[in-house]
Amino acid sequence: MIAHVCYLNTLRKLPRMPIKTCISMVHSKYGKIISKRKRFLGRKRAFETIFGTWESSFQAFPGYMAALKHANPGIVVQWRLLEGRIFDFVFWAFKPSIDGFARC
Image (cartoon, rainbow, N blue to C red; front, top):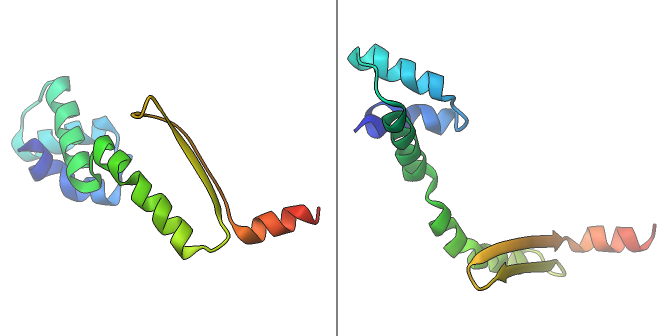
């Protein structure tokens, strides 16, 4: 409830909103001081509601890379997962950058 009432609109505008701001928002709206755990979990829940979870972003990553290749002919894209689930790295270079670097 704290996430939806207090944090959603503010996090959309300020994704890096400090926890102190969260505390003051709850205090001014309800006149209560909430625990650190509730502050953290409320902010986390609101953030995930707006931007999604790490897991959902990770699952969508191959689609992002495919869209990047489709929209940019000649692009070089490499990425690697360790043990199938651990993200290791991603690299991409656009074709004009590759061509320009070859002339340096």
